[in-house]
Image (cartoon, rainbow, N blue to C red):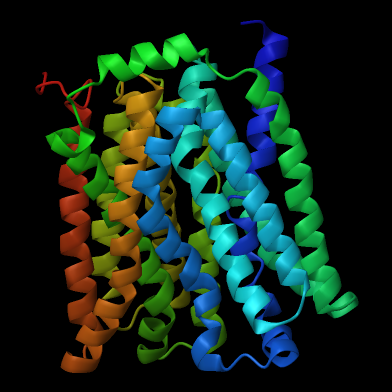
Length: 396
């Protein structure tokens, strides 16, 4: 593969990755205007972010099977069309259109979540981590940027223009993905891969389950901290503004690792160092957050380390999809399996943690539980690093 072809593939990966978080992360700043425009009650507003997460959990295994039959590139193209249609529906300011459009957007996003690592495994077999780095960096950076710009756009113009902007971006992404369909792996190669994997399911692989556990726990820990840390900080005497700032610092600290983790993973011993960083950051951070009387500087420093752990954990879990599989068929299946487990855990974590706090009236116990889960995550990472392949025995 020539350098020019690699650049063109990375460009297509960039286009589709733009929409892997943006349609979700751009919505919170638009919610007040959206609620007013369509008469959406506060009790139902959360559905706009919950619907995609539930879609991810349900549809992920099906996408792997569709990719195996029709080709990953074609499936992503078809589901990106659904994403574009969903974005167009949300321009129409009615409750039914917004909800159904959000459902279609969830389908489109999840197709890339599950199948893009497999496409990268196929199309850039010699430099898969370069592709992973491109898509995770784009996904997270554009998602974060969208949250900030969406509020500015809706204030400067109106809700319809903001939604129309998201539609145009999705349309550009669709056009940018078309060249990848022409580069799809030949049918005879896909047939060969299907025969290779006949009789072996990733759902029977112990390592596949551990990778799913790793992805699920990092999602649960991140979303639980994101949801409840502001309440923890307020209970410790900080203002709401300070609490929000600490969480923002945590999120920003994670962003550089979308680019760094795939590159570090290619280095000898890189995965081991990163798993230790995840363990120290998440376990240590959860325990330190439970200490009362910390000052602003101390909490800020802890938030940075937790953010670093979060950035490493998410991106390392994506790296595992490609690193521990032999071909794109396995990559798609492991990705689908892990994201099914992961998003179910992610959706349940904040609810369970909130229930525990209301039952025991103690954030300290919640943070201790978070530290225990982080330690299990650390152990899962150590186990995965002893494997070369999801069906291999451990090696030393």
